[in-house]
Length: 243
Length: 272
Image (cartoon, helix red, strand yellow):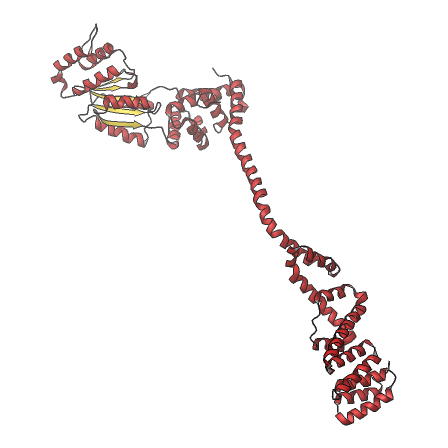
């Protein structure tokens, strides 16, 4: 005899019973998947993440934030990885700096390169960051350079060093000092063309134009220096004057 | 109208041995032909075995129906457990002698030896169904009887561990042929259901059994014919109930898997 109500209930229970193993299997797969992701994935992330983050930082950082990056470099060894990119930015900045320098003190730059002075990149970065103090910093460095060269000059009495100091002082506007060191150079070696040029130029700047012309003419007569002739013309034509 | 269809379909799956309903699949047909060939040989015994519901009884019935006119053949579909009754029935069938009193094995053998000459030309065949129900003692006597070559036996029994032992102990040296019947495959089960229903002109019901439902039935019954009959009988019982009380619950196009499962729970094929 059929008892359909009872049979329907038993069937419902049976269906629930059959779904339980499937449900357990499904949940187990999900749990195992989550465990797998949480256990294994982060390890990979730990390796990759610093690099990615660093790269992003490099891209996003602008010049203003570079200052903040510099101390980090010293604190976190992992950030040393950044150094090449950082240098690249520094190089870019260095180019800008060079342009500015060319505008202001072209000759001075040339001298620096001639003397193979290696400019510290980090110091130049600081220069770039502190635009307002740019000239001051340059002077400080130049003063240090001059001091350093003078020490060397005291040791070996090399006229190239005294000429370098004369040119530096001239560029910085210390014409009396440039006059003195040009004279010192000339006393050591009177055949250096540049020492005569700086000497006469300094005289002009010190309002000794006539004296400068007299000395320059005498030097041209003796040496036939073309550079000295150009300078003479410039002085006479007024291209080069006291101001 | 719908209710009548289900009633007719239900009757199809009553678990009875009707030889005319026998459906021969290719696999079974080959076995059957092999058996027909074997019974013509001078073999003492042929063993047909298989799990319950694999069609052993139907197989014997079919053999009996097809061959009884060509050969002296007797089918004992119900085991005769009493020894005296067994030998009395055997004496009546083989020798045409009626015994009112007790007949033991010795008396039967004496009678049989006296009439041996008459039996030589046409050795009678005794088909014993459900042979696992016979006692060990009676089985031993049947074995001795087969040794006389006055009678041949085809014995059908269930295949279980215990019954395998019976087969080994009593018949191993004498069985010249053994045939195992197995459950059907999915395709065979589908043909079985379709043919049974179509034979009784239940075409609408036959069309309701699609691949999916047959697969589920196969999963539940493992292709066993008796279990399939039980399940489908119960299934149509549920269909009849729903047709009368809640017609919305039965889809008309296909057999509902839910109802198949309910029928399986009802018949105990699914333990819910």
